[in-house]
Image 1 (cartoon, rainbow, N blue to C red):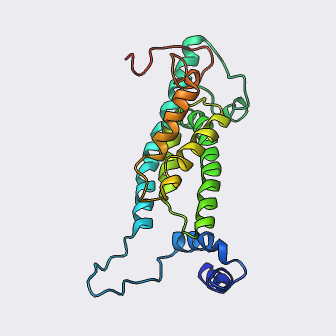
Image 2: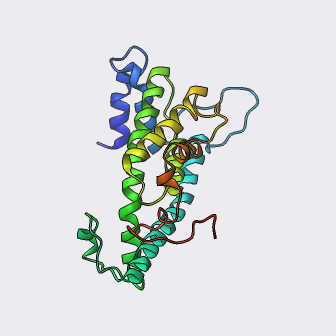
Length: 231
């Protein structure tokens, strides 16, 4: 049985009158993320185009993936470079286990990429999980669809945070960004604040020690250098 057949089979349970009517937004999110929506424009004057908001956001996500790869590589490269300068052979945390397979050489691109990914991915996964919960909650209560725009916001938010940001602060920041920066104004298309930047601004003023200084942008404890603004 194909995914299309499975979705068509369970659709009546999520439409009006079904047992899971209030969760239609979740069903619609999965359905339209995989397949093109079946709805068509019925007005007399319209533009026939399959590139809706969901597809546009998907294109942005794909474009941002290259930024993510470079961010992970550079984070790992700067960390490995700092370790060489400090004479460290390994890091004293859980990341040392997977890094045993790749080493810490700045000349090894896989080492740089994996090392950076071990800092970026926990932040991104936390952002995606906590922010996704807020998105689904508001969509369910309001009866709206879950918009793929959050995938873009989650990536941008993770990219503009320091690599060693505490995960509980990451969760607080994205919660503030989604709820205060977007949902209180009505959601996608009605907010005038950028959720990612709103979350970062909250962390900047609430936890300045984790966002500023000469050590937060290099993922090695005890290493300092000029701040980005100082450069």
